[in-house]
Image (tube, rainbow, N blue to C red; front, side, top):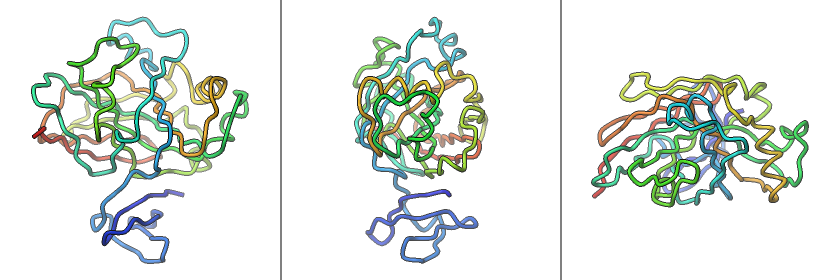
Length: 247
């Protein structure tokens, strides 16, 4: 099932996808264009992976990491489908990052790798923008690179885990103004989803609503005000975002 959170007439509603429309929790059927899309989950802790695709690490002239490179993001960074993201005034290089988002569905500690999928509620699409100008260390992005308000669109859907039978074999693509700029597959992750869940849960307790952003493949390019950026993941969704200038 594809689940969403939307804003309609000043009220937040849970919704599910139904034949190209949205079925609200109160039974109404509405058009996707008639609502404001919210992130499909209200994230608790957001874990983000750096250099989790070997081709992306090579693209940046880095050796592939031997352990997961994890940093945290605040919930202020998350915005919804069709929302706008600001490019800071004076920035010379801002790029998209199409990422599979893994949403935790139950409290989990010390999860064995072979049971990792049992704690997953579902999957979504993320676009974790980075401001390259502010990057001091690719291994540990600093606050200005990855924690700006609204810098990480998420959605449109939370797709139930049962409906994504093989999350480690999904095609990812990014289009800028309709042109394909990035394409890869989740099978090329250095640390796959079970590894990440086992690793993170060995350090701290994972809770329902936690989100793991699993990294991006090669193919990054600069984007600016007026660009429409679409990040797509096979079987999970197509997430649209608009770049606007900072005021």
